[in-house]
Length: 355
Image 1 (cartoon, helix red, strand yellow):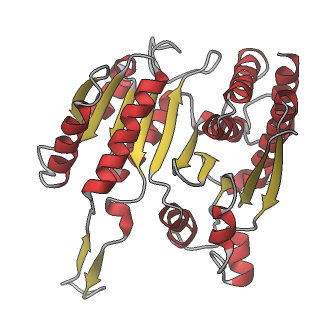
Image 2 (spheres, rainbow, N blue to C red):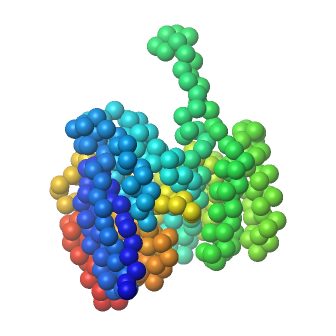
Image 3 (spheres, helix red, strand yellow):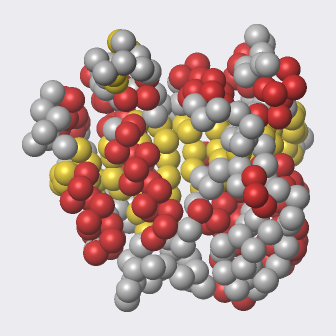
C-alpha cells in the first residue's frame, strides 16, 4: 500500500494561490513517480478571510493544522489589512503554537540565474541559514507608555532562553553534519554590544561544539556577516543565528541567490508539524496576471518532501527546477520570465517526468 501524507494547504493572499497551484502540480507529479500519495486539506487563512469574517485563526484551526504531516503556505499579506495584524495573528502565532522553532533557509545560486555579486557563481553561493524562530525580539515582550506624547517610551525586549538557544544550535550542528559539504558552522551574533543575549548564544555554541568535533566552527558579528555574504559568500556553509538577525540576513541571502522568485524556506518543528513557504510574500500587484514566478513555491514543496523523508522525490524536483532554469526562463523576476506562472509549472512538471 502506498504511503500517504496529509498536507494542510494555506494558499493565502495575492499571488499565493497561483504559486501554490503550480507547487501542487509538481508535488503530485513527484509523488506519482515515487509511489506515494499526498492528500490535501485547504484552509482559507489570510487577509481576505480576515476582512470577510474578522477571524485570524479559528478556534480549532491550529489543532487541525497540527494533525497534518506538513503545512504548505502560499503567502499571507493584504493591502487592505493594517501591517502587523496578519503577521502576528497568523504567521507568528502558528510558529509559536506549533513550536516551529527553526526557520530553515537554503541560499543557493542555480545555474542560469544571475546574481548581483560580481564574479560569483553557483559554486560560490551555496549555504544555509538556521534561524531561531520563536524567541528574540519577535515574542512581543515590551510595551509603550504615554503613547503619542513628547514623553512616549517604547520598549521591545529580546527573550533568549537557554532551552531555545540550545535546541536551535544543536539543530544547526546536526544539519551541518547531514549536509556534509564544508562541515563548518558559523555563529552570527553581536557579542560586542548585545553582551547578555549573545554571551548566552556564544557559551551554548561553544559547549555544544565539543560534541561535534567533526564540525569546524567560527563566529562573526552580524554586520560582518552581511559584508562577507556580499564579498565572499563562498566562506559559508551553515550559519546559525537569532530571530531578528536571521530575518535580516536571509533576505540578503535571497538577493544574492537571484531574488525572491527563487527563495524558499521552512518553519521547522523536528518533532511536530512544519510549514513550508516561498519567501517573497503575496505580491498583490501581480495578482491574477500570471506573471509571478512559482519556482520559490515549487522549491518550498521540494524542501517539504525532503523534510518528510522523501529525499529522492525532493531531488527530482530540484533537478527539474535546475533544468528549467538552464533553458526556459529568461529571468526569475516577476513579469520578466518569458513564460506565464502556469507555463513555468508545466515546464518543471515535464522536466520531472522526463528525468
